[in-house]
Length: 245
Image 1: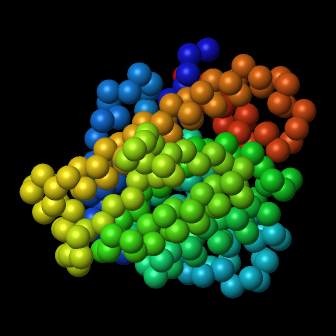
Image 2: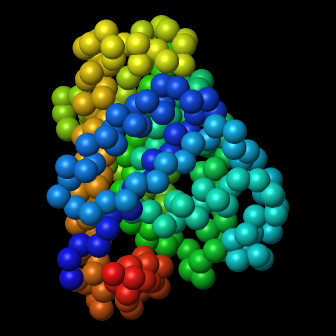
């Protein structure tokens, strides 16, 4: 079997459209040159409403369906269907924006009811792009939080290539608050901004490569893995894609 399409979901987790979206767009612009079939979806938090988890545990009784009526489940279904998740975030208070934290809190909680077994092997590759106003402003701390999120959900965090990227792509806007600060710095051929974009591109490329290897490997080992119900959702998705092809 040839490697099936690698499905990439780029999540712009900023409530406004600006620097995080530009960094995500730049990171994805070379995908057509990859030696794999790819399909890209973009989700923006702009104008979306994702409430905090209220810890009612109704999702465990409703097969993962949340009682809150907002945009959470729309994004969850995109997340589940993807092989690669690229988070592009602004740094808020040395961490991720609250909207994204609400999403990942509810994502983990609703999986208790969504799947019949705990610790499902989601096996997604997750890459993180972070930018903030200041040079030493929490980018690595925010990236580290999302790496923990990846490991907790049995996914694989992927970095880009050094020296630009050690655990993800991190950049800053040179103390400029404007939502188009990175765009301005790009036009000025700013060295640090170019380095951030190079890192972002390598994060996406490596995450796509690893996802392709995982899909190919799991297909080859599907009989061996089928005895463990934690792999069942991933293997079922592979089978659906095989029949679709």
